[in-house]
Length: 51
Figure 1 (cartoon, rainbow, N blue to C red):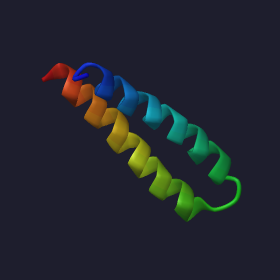
Figure 2 (figure 1 turned 90 degrees about the horizontal axis):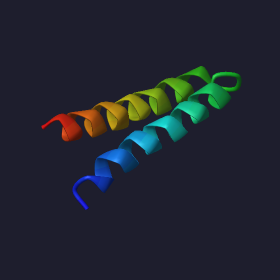
Figure 3 (figure 1 turned 180 degrees about the vertical axis):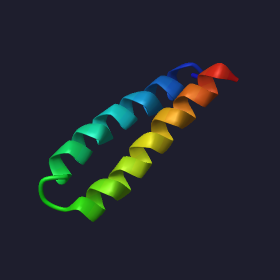
């Protein structure tokens, strides 16, 4: 289970990046917020795998 969660976090971050691309055409502030969450998911997943 401890190796699955970081991979899920990275996958969630990738899914959210798609949302950023979609939202950037409609609402830039919302895209920035989702982008921050996407970056946090990806960085958190990588940090978890490294540690």
